Image (tube, rainbow, N blue to C red):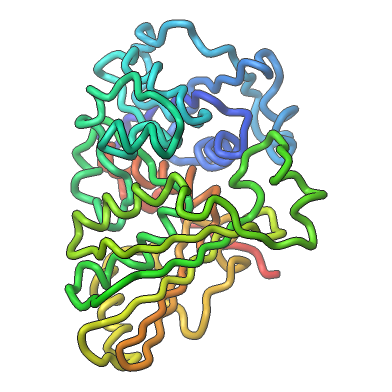
Length: 346
């Protein structure tokens, strides 16, 4: 990309939490102009009337999504922050000049039968699947750099895969993997449902979707591309009574005894040059990564027993921040551009 050329971006689906975070990041990105943002139910309203955290920071108004996206020849990239099942019908309409980043699960899974099993939807654009690159930036950086279409990973998948990837790639794993992952309520979106709204979640803790979570095949599919991945993979999700954050505890066994330093070296080597992955002593804390694009990882060994803890903000590194990180690579920018901001303390 020319150094002085600005990227014109569209956000399709800007009223939800993912869209809100895209706006928060892109409105202040030094190389991006937000051309428009859609939100059918909020069309005509000021963005800052819907997302009050942006009050006084933008005059942008939400628009109704075009019935046909083929006329969007004046934008460079479109972000799709829509419920599962909608982007698959819209992205094929885009002009071929427009790059697309999908934050939903529509293009993450290669096999349409597996997609239907976990998402309970028929895939209407399966022929486009081969044109999408899986956008876990740290493990797929070079493919993202040359991609035209990117399927942004799910939030659980991001934390879990970053926690497991160095060990899978090392060839040291032996036996099953068990992941115990916990998430805040914002991962369920803006519309309350019986199991996700505040009165249900506050002061509560429970598991959900045992063996059926839609991120299971996504995690396995990508890790199998990095190395030997065991078929015996247990992934369990739990609801935390907080609004933001994912904490994944990844339990593994290894073929040889490893010291803590051995293990730390495996992770440091794998993530060398990955600015947004930080090695933590002890344990990560979701408060340290909240509102940031960082993934904090801590690893510990007990002979052949290994645990990796990974923490992210589900809306930033697990969604909008990673999408912008991928956009940066797709347009030849430093992947950190517009994303270097710390969390808060406390």
